[in-house]
Image 1 (cartoon, one colour):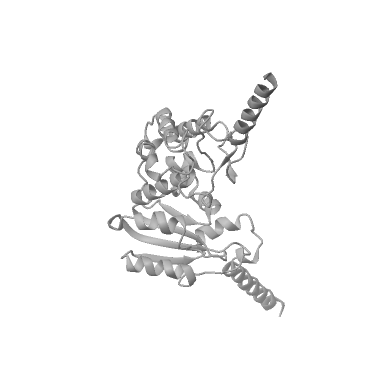
Image 2 (cartoon, one colour):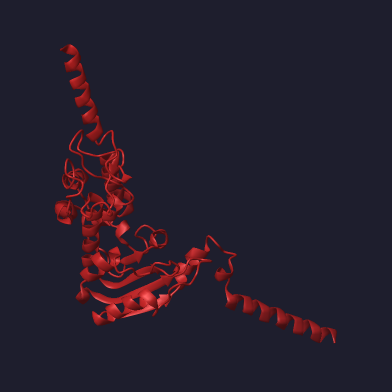
Length: 299
């Protein structure tokens, strides 16, 4: 009798272990970032005290609580963008006119150029984006309500906590943008500088308030030394330009916008793409002029 009871308890323990998300990976994605609460609250105070104190006082604890309530202890595939509405209300702030910068496949370059809100303010430099950038999170029915082993990818389920977060973050950011806005695209990628299923195409461009936008400036940036796959007026960039025209947006398009190109060349100053032909030509002309003067004295 005792042996049978022992084996029954052992079997239950093994079954529990098999379904416990703290022990078994249920999804393909990474698990919740460790110390998520401390990271979010710390980032919040860093933003309002150091990065961008101009947005005023915010209750970082309340922001964290609103954030966690969207997904904690919940099915990781049933979290909708609307579940973050309270968080968005507490964390959103104005995007200064002419400082909105949208992007696709140029994240690192965008943030180098934005200079942490000093030059531009892409989504990742707003409080909302600052809090969620590069983190992972999802709920669990056990423990402290968070799954630290794994979280679902969008391929596994569309309505996962991270995907839904960035969807409502993107639509909110687009609706707050005004004046001249910039869009930085990657002209060297093979799968399209402006993919029709991208976040910009689905959750930002449709939510721009046309009455608040005076101009859309597209910058198509090739990688230094990379292929020139797309340029203004071609392929998917041309598709974006046609959409903007049809929607009534004033827009311009520039290949390898000079200010950003110079920033790219900081890491590759000797690359042929980073040399200045006009400066080289000027030096050659100056050398020729000096040589002419020297020869006039000799002969």
